[in-house]
Image (cartoon, rainbow, N blue to C red; front, top):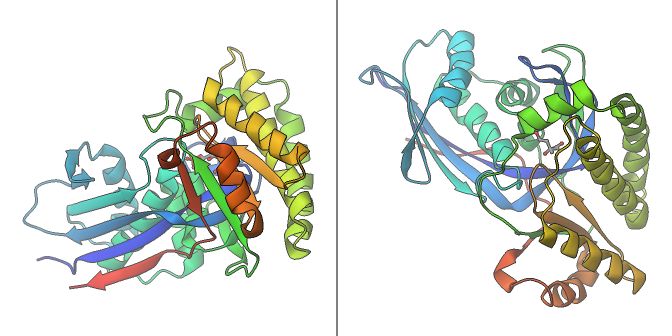
Length: 325
Ligand code: PMV
């Protein structure tokens, strides 16, 4: 017996108000709510077929056979929910530099949640899909939706999921990803966030101030107040990285070129161009700007980086099924 072969596409998202720390490591319940923007330029396509002729799960990423342990653990959740106890073949193609801090795990688990649950015959609604994707990687729960998305932290499996804030923004927002190092990151987000929860003396202040930042950024987005939104996003990112610097032992994701990019953005701001940076669990810097300023900002960044290092995105759509055969 073979199920239908299902392909789903999900786009990455970049948090403007960051998630950094879990309350429940197994269920992936976060310490704070977060808010992100789904991007059109980076996505993952994943095909899943359950097949009784297989003896175990198979996983290939970008054409290469890979260790399937994490994928298998995720598929187990789908097998439990559906009662379909068969191994599966999972084929993923990442249109995102894998593990470079450009949130490939978000698009990967959102696409896997949709493809695997559909192949297994589950007809999950978006809230259920978001909960399922969360179990693979927290930020993946937000990639079920397009545009601006809020992950409500909740307190258990049922109550922790993302919901759309503005799914198809008409605002002309762009995000420039500056790819500084596309290699696998040195400190996983799983380890990094666990370590700051346990050791940073600033952690309680992070949780408290992030709830305030979230309320403020939602107002800014509704008012299309770019300066307010960008200022809050940059602040959230720097607070997250300050947790890393204040952990014991401390660690960080900065490389010399990350700081160079941040200084270039600050210089542009000093010259009157509204643009703001954010950074995740890797050295790449993402610059949030308005479409009207894109060319000016790119020209400035090209004084520091090669054109291939600068990848421009706009708000992107939620997870969708691509084909059924
Ligand atoms: O979902 P994870 O485990 O990849 O964690 C992602 C955490 C950040 O990207 C750094 C912040 C966020 O909210 O996406």
